[in-house]
Length: 121
Image 1: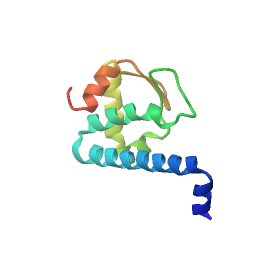
Image 2: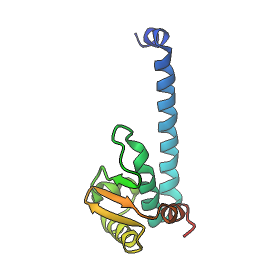
Image 3: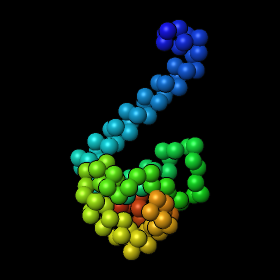
């Protein structure tokens, strides 16, 4: 029984509550992202949020693993694949990111990326 398990393992209840809180915060951030941000702000926010999503796969500082295709990113961000590709190219051309492969990049200028994500650039 679920309740008995929680009573036997109080740490499990705390862990589940913390996970639920994290998921709720992520859902709120996603609603903000889709509702108020420009395409470039969405892409920048997405790239900034990715490194912390998978603690089981720590990367070098500045490295970002892209766990999805450009089409999946577009769907997640409410954009077209062309807009995502143009946005990444714009960040690359500006020297803010460096594309290492289809599934990995390095953030060269995190402060500029953060400014874009927050609508300050």
